[in-house]
Image 1 (spheres, rainbow, N blue to C red):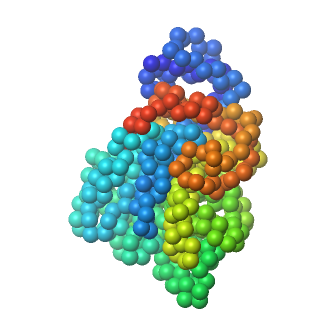
Image 2: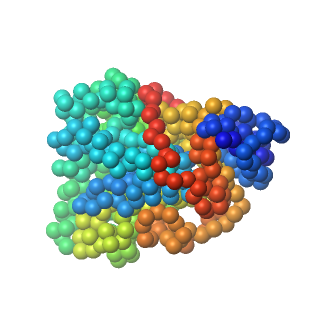
Length: 460
C-alpha cells in the first residue's frame, strides 16, 4: 500500500514549503521535490495546504453524565472527527468513587474497542485518590500508555477531589513520569451560587453563566498552578476560558514555572450573549461557560504569546431532547457542546484567514503541541520521515456553510449554524490510508488504533 501526494504546500509548526510526500504502509517514507516513485495512488495537491492530522486532546464520547450519555458514540464521534481533519482524539475515562482505575478503564474499553474510526487514546480522570488508587498510577503510565491524569476542582460529590488528594496525586504522578490535568473552577463557590439562584427562582440558562463568574476560574487556576509548582509535577489546565485565569498562569511564569494551557474553539469564537436567548441558550450550556469578548481577545493574544498551547473542543454533545432535561432548571441541563468536526476549519477560517494567527501557529496548537505535550511526538503531530502518515489536505479558498443537516456528529443542532467559513478540508489520510475524500468516509469502524503514549517531560 503506497500513496504519493504531489505539489502540495506543506505546513508544519516550523516549516512552509512545496514538496511531494511518498507514503509506504502507515509511515511517511520520503519527502522531496518532483518525486517519481511508483505509487498505488497519487493525489495532486497543487494549490492546497498539506498539514499534519489534527489532534483533539479533549473529547467525551459515550460519556455518562447527569443521568444520560453524551450522544456521539466512539464510531460516530471519531468518524465526525476525521471529516473535520482530526485524525487522533484523547478521550476521558472517569473513575467511579469507591472503585479502581482499572475498573474504569475496562468499562471505557468495552465501549471503545473495535469501534473507533480515527486513532485515539485516554486520559484517566481520578475522582477518588487513595492508597489503592496510588498503587495503580505506575501501571497506567508504564504498561497502559496512559500518562495523563485529570482532576476536577468542581462537581462536588461526584467528580471533585480536594487539595489534599490533588497534592498526593501529583507527587505520585511526577515520580513515574506523568502529568496532571485539571478542570480548574472553584466548586464550592459555584455550588453556593447555583443554590442561591435556584432559591431565588432564577432558572434560565443565563444563570448557568452567572453561577460561574470569572473569579471561580481565576482562583482555581492560580491554586492549581501553586500546587503544581510545589510538587514539581507537570500541570495542564483544560478548557481555560478567561482573562483572569490566563493572568494566573502569566503570574506563574514570573517564578519560571510553565503551566500548559488548553483553550477550546468555542471560547475563541462565541460569547455569553448567547445565554440571553430564552431556553435556546441551553445549546451553549457547558462548563466553564462562554465568557465575554474581552476574554476572546485575551485568548487569541495568549496563543500568539505562547501562553495558550492547545486549541481543543471539549466535545461533549447532547441531543436537544437531552438538553430539555433542564427546561425548568438550568442546573439540570447536561453540560456540553458539539465541535469535534468543526475545530480545524473554524480555527483556519477565523484564525488564519482573518489574520489572527499564522499557518505555523495553527499547526502548532491544533496538531503538534498536543502530540508533544502528551507523549506522541514525532509519531504524531508533524509531517516528517518515519512519522505516521496522518495528513490533512485543505483548500484554503473554498467557502462553505456549517449546518446541522450536513454535519456527521450525532446531534441534531449546531452551535455554529449558518456560519460561513473560508477553507475546506478535502482529503484526510490516516496512517497511510485515505480516510476522507470530498466528504466521503472510506474507512470502517475498527480501523482506529489505541495509541500508547510515552512519559512526558513537561516541556515543548
